[in-house]
Image 1 (cartoon, rainbow, N blue to C red):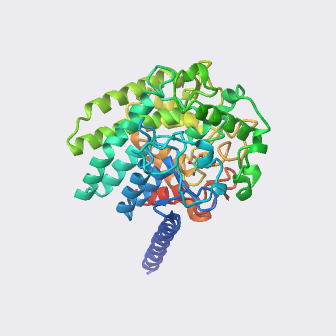
Image 2: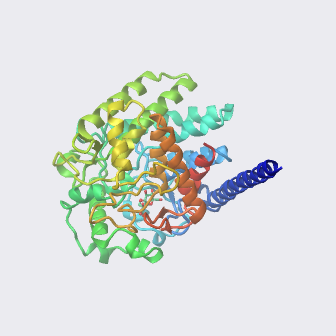
Image 3: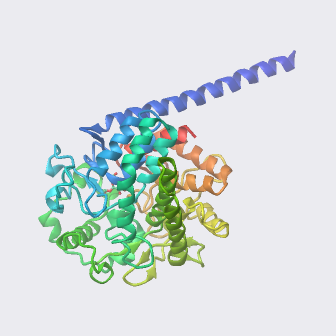
Length: 456
Ligand code: 9WN
């Protein structure tokens, strides 16, 4: 009798645990969908209505990965809208501006960039910078989850511009001449004020009058302690003006441009894009072989140029000086997403990730990894990419763990992300000690990737 009662009560307890787990998943799913729907603005999804009122490049890719779970037509639409801004040289701009938004709502806006508008680019004004190429991976994800005739047609349409994007990055942007794309502005990394760029930025002048000529709009909407500093911004503007004033020419970058860096996150995503293009080529009747060959060359170049054997992880390379950045940033862990990263390199990344620097959860509980080394004296828990937790980076790490068969670690990381988003909501980033949501609330890529994590 006692046993029966115990059995019944434990059954009831586990049923209610399941019910509450299901309902907390369902609540998050609804929040994520509402966030993405609320950020739909005049023909595309914005990262945040509060801070980022235009369409951003790598955001659009993460957003499509989330939309794939409930509105694939909109996922394709968002990707096509972004690629509507692609330049004739193949670059996919880091922002496609919405011409219905006031110039004063975001700095630097279209008037600053003065990007050329060739007739082939009716998509409107853009910046001349790029961001990490997550789009082929996103297109492949949208198709894989919705393998319909319509999706196949969309893949066929997107494949040529996706190939052109890669050709631009691996061609004109191979400033180091060794087969990896260079970024020519911290904004191109997507990890804007990461300490990875501190050393190269010391070579960039700080012209304080720039902030008298231009007004930072971000500080009207976000806390100054959370955003890049004014010194950073002066440098960002100087680099952007320099690039703009060459007509975005990409000539002699390593000698003439003030900021030329190879980033392990950007490079690994360029390799992942070639692998996704190989899959896409296969299903649309193209040839996957050149993509696989390029993917292998990229992995080899990352190992050759960005690997630090002493730390066992990857670091940003200043192409102008040939020096690796000495600091430990989360971008150094992202080459784990490469399936052909030799197994001998995996333990080094895992050791760094699980060390006190990043604290990857190795058991239930814990927080996702921060953007920068927790043990560094300049670790800053609220300033943007200098400490806070970002979901897109953790999502990539999660994929890398699964790619290399570390399923238990992947499950802990997934749970830590979902718990955090359930508790705090879809924030732009999170405090690495308390987990409190920081930055823009209702942030699109957090919502989108939550949907992807929930479906795993
Ligand atoms: C500059 C939109 C973008 C992200 C970047 C993030 C931030 C912009 C800014 O917001 O950058 O591009 O104004 O700070 O750093 O990764 O794509 O969400």
